[in-house]
Image 1: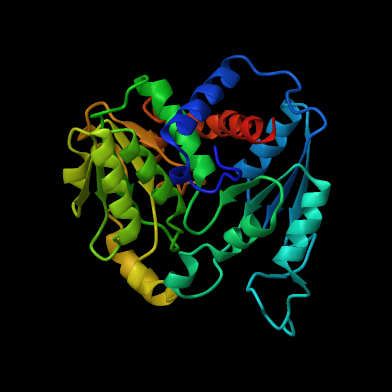
Image 2: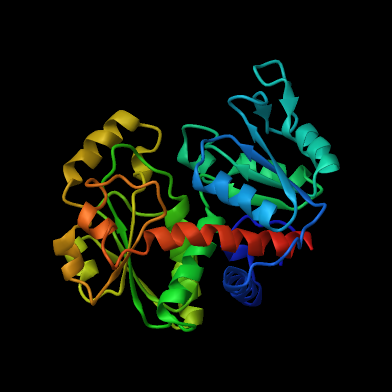
Length: 333
């Protein structure tokens, strides 16, 4: 396994399988003080509910400890650009903060934010990778603009628990849904890669103009070719749902309109029919509903689906704890 945990695609097949198996074992029989004396720093440049709670509880249950640092309360703006003349608002460079925190802690976990209004800038996840370059301890990506490997790993654990060890050939629909604001593609990218890599029959459903990143799609198609799976793009939600076994709802912004929130919102408002409701789920083959949370009830998904017996949402959330314990144990032991 790499020194850092930044993207699922960085893991070998063996490393991914080991993490999933370890998470399931830890859920069945929690380890006792496996990381006694170890410390984890949690740096949040964006708000969090599940991620912060599960990492703090994971370290506690493993016998270690964590500290929480928030950019809104605990530290100041940090500069990430190399060679920058720092005469602007940032009083400290990432390289200095990373080196200092690495001398205190055994691992760092970062939730980053987009660095600029341009998609080509944001897709590079420069703030995250600046921390990875300069930290001398393992770094965990708690979500960046482009990737959410912690959520992706928990999703794989949930799929394995639900459908068994082999997921090859199972129809899986990643369904774009309407949302009051443009969301980052991080969750969509991570689960798309995971589902394709596991040999699932992946259908990516979205309105025209909401295509995912071309490089990510090509990477998913290549992963599917190796695993015996497939990746298909659908512009019709009903078509994508027909006979599927999994409906993973998620919103993401329009790449051509990135950084233009008013224009993008007007475009998005024309697609209110992109919602997962009872009628949509009846088109599936006894399909299971998944979402990473937080979820907008009766905008993204109706109450009856979210609270129904075929919803895996709360199991996904619970599995964040166990999958992150697996990551921490693997990186810190």
